[in-house]
Length: 193
Image (cartoon, rainbow, N blue to C red; front, side, top):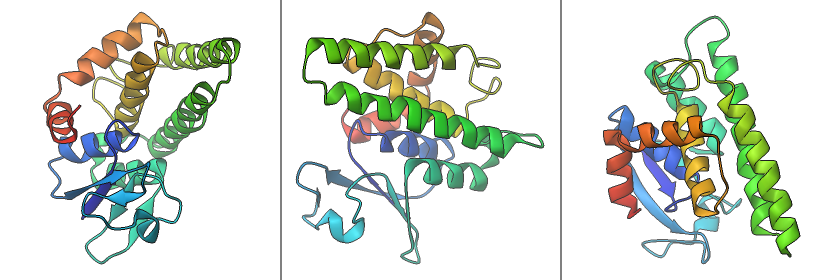
């Protein structure tokens, strides 16, 4: 299995999750600016969407989109899922919110053409982070064990830090709790973060 990633991109969540469960996989670094892998392969030939993450299975089948890959990881490794009758549905609900409401909101910040637009984008992001902070069921989103959604949220919090978006104290504490996990330390070291 191969994970195509770019340092500091949302693919970091998948990398952390795979490290967390001790999965055996290879990493292929992608330069998103040039759309080339570290070995010089045209990434568009691998994923015409041009974005990471991409998970390539041993049989050559590809899985794209962060939510889909994280859902697959949780299905294969239930310790990173959410138990209960509606656990998987709640997990997909959280992953989708992080993807569409948080992750996508950073694009507005990156594309802001003025300080006013940037301030508006940051305010919208802060509002979404505040909502998430109120949904915690324990030390992590769903209880006292991390799920794949926690790793995706962690990456969004790293982005918030990078772009000086203030977040609620609960989320800062959560980010620091995740940051010291061995899987995160390994992923950071490998990706040069």
